Length: 517
Image (cartoon, rainbow, N blue to C red; front, side, top):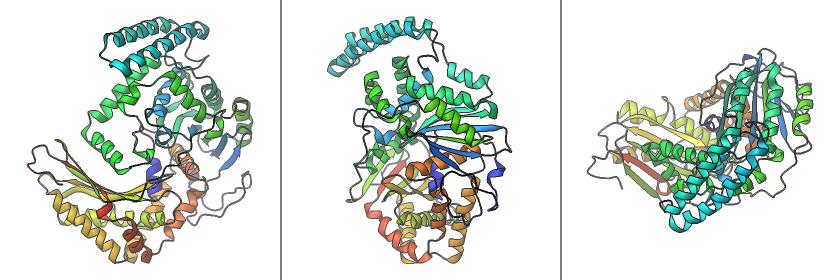
């Protein structure tokens, strides 16, 4: 159900859709070679033959072999993201996503030793530039002078830079789906390679794990700043959602945008980024997942060869101990924009693996999709909206239950709000029917199976569950949802779906004479 949907949403960029039919095997598939202890056969009959191991430096490895394909999905995930950043440093993980493609001491350069003086001079100038920025602002003539000098040095340094060498190496060796993404609690670096080119992945990624050079840092900082403006500041719906999320989360760093606030991005320094990298981008905070035509034993030997000598983190990682305080009154947020009007309602939910999450997943299914109560009421019956539904967003710490509606032009938001409250009231007062429960469970099983139809989908789900606790929960979670009794739904809905304690967001037309407050 929703945890699978959430994992699918982790990537902010396109993914390839190559099918892997062999994964959808029956219970007869042998697991005799799996290194980890045996686990119960899932009721669904879907079996994923996972080989699990780790290196002495803490790097975890999951391998799902499939001889029916000629490629391997290669993915390296670091368990760090927006939630691991601090005030004045939001967006560092996303910035490093960009920097990892700039190369290392041997990749992306014609002569690294000749680059070093330029790198050192640029960093020295940047310290002066940041001091001016903090005291006088970016409009000051001295700031502009320092920035100009940095760009001048960078232009000279570029004679030694091999642009996009990592991309070209992967592409020239048959790589596809080359990408990277950053989320709130993990980042992923991905490529799909022919089965006889996987060693290239080990070579490049092990080099990037220990030898990344922050070349072109200052020009890339400008790129990230512009990316933020294009994706958020200049996109009304994204801008609205960013602010709504920051209102919903009062304490937890989930309230921070993964891309970072613009003022923080402008204040990025290589020193700040290096400190972040030293704590989180290390083998003991990473997992390597390979899915496709690959032999686990040989793979582990090669992985140890390339990654085994990399040291664990020398610095203690900052663990997020902050949790959301209980909701204290409701919050309402309204913006006027000339886009499709909409409404979003966010309710506090506990972090994984609280037992109530399974009941809330069922509640999502009852309210969502074209057969769900919200769509049938708001779209089909009342014809007030073009879409409506719900999503139970399961997260490592505090999650949220989301009810949304896209309003037709001229629809009164107050009327939609009353209907949403009415449907919540019905969910609290009366257990769902057997037919509804069957629809939800069948939909959950189908969603689970569909999510395993690509090499990349399997990798993301295994990584997502490992981040939450254990990859083995990939089966256990859906079976716990299937075991939820209809009688438990009103209790869960009454406990968490309280309209008076929710965060309500509205986008209304600029031409509206009244705002919904």
